[in-house]
Amino acid sequence: MKTTATKITAIPDRVGFETLKGLAYVGSLARLAGESAYLTFVGPFKGQRLHPQRAFHQAAAVGVGAIPIVSLISLFVGLIMALQSAYELKRLGAIQFVADAVAISIVRELGPLITAILVIGRSGSAFAAEIGTMKVTEEVDAMETMALRPVAFLVAPKFLAMIVMVPCLTIWADAMGIAGGCLFGVVGANFTILSYLHATQVALVLRDLYTGLVKSALFAVVITAVGCQEGFSTGAGAEEVGRSTTAAVVKSIFLVIMVDLVFTALFYATNS
Amino acid sequence: MTAPNRDAESPMISVGNLRVSYGEREILHGISFNVRRGETLVILGGSGSGKSTLLRTLVGLEKPSGGEVWIKGVNIAQASDRELNEIRKKMGVSFQGGALFGSMTVGDNVALPLREHTRLEESTIQIMVRIKLEQVGLASFEDFMPSQLSGGMKKRAAVARALAMDPEILFFDEPSAGLDPIIAAGIDQLILELKKAYSISMVVVTHELASAFLIADRLLLIDRGDILAVGSREELAASTQPRVRQFLDRVPEPQVEDELSYLQMLTADKKAVTR
Image 1 (cartoon, each protein chain N blue to C red):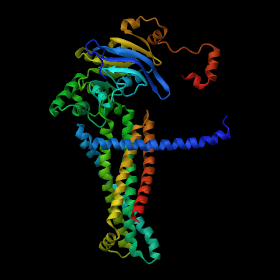
Image 2 (image 1 turned 90 degrees about the horizontal axis):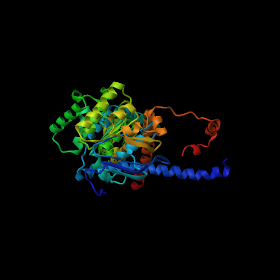
Image 3 (image 1 turned 90 degrees about the vertical axis):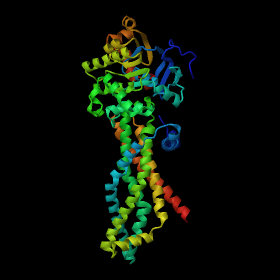
Image 4 (image 1 turned 45 degrees about the horizontal axis):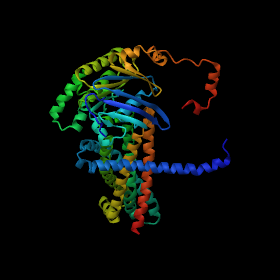
């Protein structure tokens, strides 16, 4: 029987073990991203084939397919942001600043984040399910025995597609979010469309846009790495595919928020 | 890492004292055998005997924890990725469920290794794909998706894909599992035809006795991670070893006989039972 003392001493053991497991997981993500980068940028010079058509196919699925939902959600979030900030600004008699509030919160934070969350739901889960199913049906094994590298075939095109498409979607989400704010501005705050857009333009500096885009590119890397890693770690059986899809979504959301926090803090520190 | 002599007499595959473990659990306890050039070796064994692990190790999907696997003069247990991939281009693997890529047509599946590993013209590849598909009896199914094929046809298509690079060694994982007797007999027939048409070395993993005795030059019976018997069809059929007879005569596992061992089984420490 375990005594209380051994139970207490087991706690640091466990903490250490879990910490190392977490670090090992991040390491496996980095390895996947590194191998993909190598295969994309160095591989072609060493006679390995790129798969641009697969990357295009992925880009269409990840990017073009997401436009309707990204538009709709960011339009509404822009509108919500306008309503929420107007509530406070009106009391201060500064409702004309609603354009600034919407522009800054959308472009710096909500545009990249909402895009990332939607892409996790649409594509991160799909990556895990696709690779997981291929693992279960031995297609990944078949690839290896045919001397094809699964990373080159399955992962590298996804990275390429995501790194290009997620920032593009983010720009689109920013535009739609501002359009949502504009909707409120015109209806509820005596703006015209032109004056609202002008106020937005005055409020934003270039730095706001590129910090958002840098973050969204990093989110793309995190989402792809987690989705593919979860897919490859799928065990045997159909229920395992479900488990890895869930894990991909949960871990991606967590890591995206972590990356967001770290980089927002970094940008804040370098600015002041 | 090249073997000293590579003349025609040297075996295609030579396995020496091979051990494979999953974590703490050892699946294969040091087994040794050869596959000669042009012969068909059937690996027989029950569920959980380690036969699938053996096949996965032979094609380089599992790393052995000890021993050697020489294929065409390269020890794949210690080969680099590059060496391993060179060997893999010379072998074909037909997986249990076919493992065709679901996002590509049957024709594209067969063409894939040719497109990736050779610099052949697309028109040449098309012709080769049709030849391979015709060989397995799927001539008119080039543009079908794998999901539109029946189980037996998927296996045939997988064989066509395995043949695409004109391999020197073919591996089959449970070629007749999950098929009805007629379709299974068709697959056996296909293996016999391939044997006649090319002089490929083949390694077939199965638990189907009838099919094993039909296609094998030699059989290898594996049980609980050890080799029980190796020999020609006649040698194996004439074996008097009790465990071999049990497998060949399809006798079920005996019940626990006496009460003492039954009690032991119930109360035993789990660690003592699993070794």
